[in-house]
Length: 354
Image 1 (tube, rainbow, N blue to C red):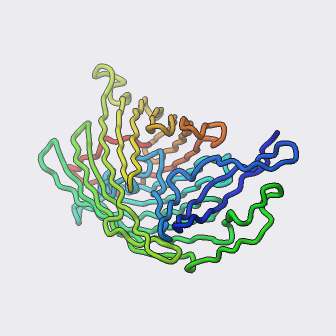
Image 2 (cartoon, helix red, strand yellow):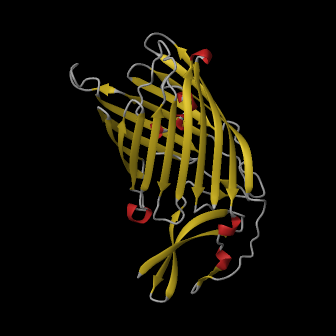
Image 3 (cartoon, rainbow, N blue to C red):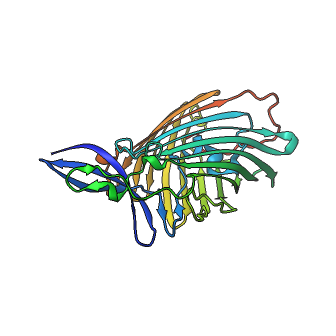
């Protein structure tokens, strides 16, 4: 008995419900048995020829801050570049691979931050690809010497593509010999969709704490790549955290801290709660997170004045199992660029680097 490959196929139900499954092809002696390994966990569910999905997500939320919340643009004070790579469930052929790159900085002239962000996501070895390019503006409102708000908005263009040739349908399967037939299902639509998207958020913060929220897809754009309409559901995010200094006010006081955080996200009935903490000692950071009923996460990072590098691994604790999924790997890099003039009286947010 051995597993030799995974196959992605699509079945059409009588009510035109399209569901994309990842199936394992399992050989037992000479008989082929098809077993469902997993439904693409946030992937595709269609009803009445409508495709719906959840957004790509990152584990290292704060290494990609303006993806989490547009209000965080310019929150570091000086220009910064953020690069992220995520490979989710690498042992499955139908894994998710996501890349992102972002730049943001604070500008005294506009009393806030500006940013650019690009993202590219591949699902099922490029069966579905999503690309995004967006611009961000945030406004910094100083309430008093101890507390400030930042309000941000993002305008973005999305491009989605469905490669119909990479889909395998139920009528192509022979129960003994596998995928040997041609499908009778034909593409509906051109498999492409471009659309404008709007998001907004806020952050309130003091010296050692912060909280915030964001709403993505405010205009609920149509993302359908086949005939019919599919409105992208809004994604709601709430997050909060603190920076707790450890030890006495001595040699290690300013370099050692614990940073507990909580992040909650909701989209189209899908809820995700992330609870975790980081421990920072000098230039080194370690962290542990738990994502409800999905994963236990370990994070490691190193930070200098000009550069940071982080790695995290998601251990799958759902019914899928880490042995089948292979967990998830994520790598982040960040570059802090030199300020021409450091903003005076600017308060940075005490959020983690990863």
